[in-house]
Length: 136
Image 1: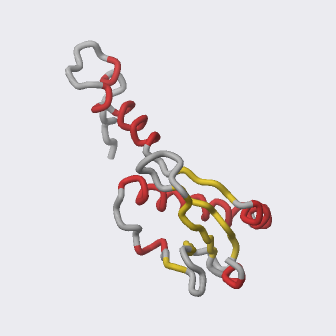
Image 2: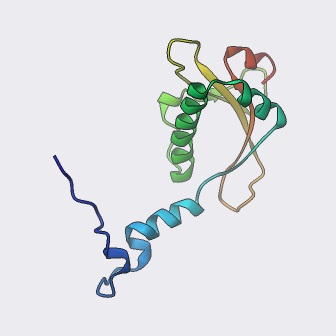
């Protein structure tokens, strides 16, 4: 079944459109982009990320997209991401996702000082499988 596009392609740019641009499709996407959380990656995270297979990186990006949506909107983080605190590490969190037939993928992070007021700042620490939890 074909569903029509909303808003129509001409709606954001129409001179007869009484709604401001922020209420149209283009404006909403632009305002959401500004509200995205900021992030940085520690060198060890970058090294771990290079060791992942392309499929594992793809699954991580998908999980991070869901996490970003939740942080951006202020909703509680969805249970499917299995976010929890790492034991014996103050302020460090773990994100878990399925990795197909292999072991579950994990990434650890902590919240850093806000770079933009009112926007969370995520500092990625490690990524891999369960072994990263020995030194998150």
